[in-house]
Image (cartoon, rainbow, N blue to C red):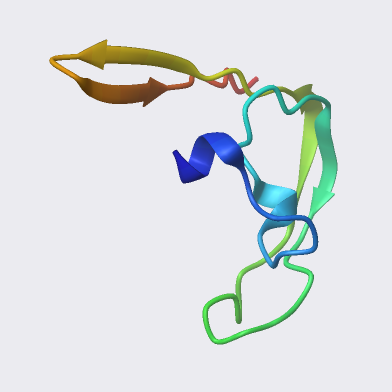
Amino acid sequence: PYYVRGAKSGSLCELFSTADKRKNIHGFLDWTRQTGTTKGLPGFTLDGDYSVQWDTYEIENINFFQTIIPVQ
């Protein structure tokens, strides 16, 4: 469920959030702060606009989440 809810505003990974219904993800994505876990991770540029749409399925009272983001 964390991936569906997305990152908190102002968090280290906010630009990389996979929150449900997030739209128009584009441009340069970079880590806003260098920490022990992000040191050396390069930023990158998205050429297109991307959106996230999650689907939820319940099987035997267990929730499953799925999203497909086509990359061009």
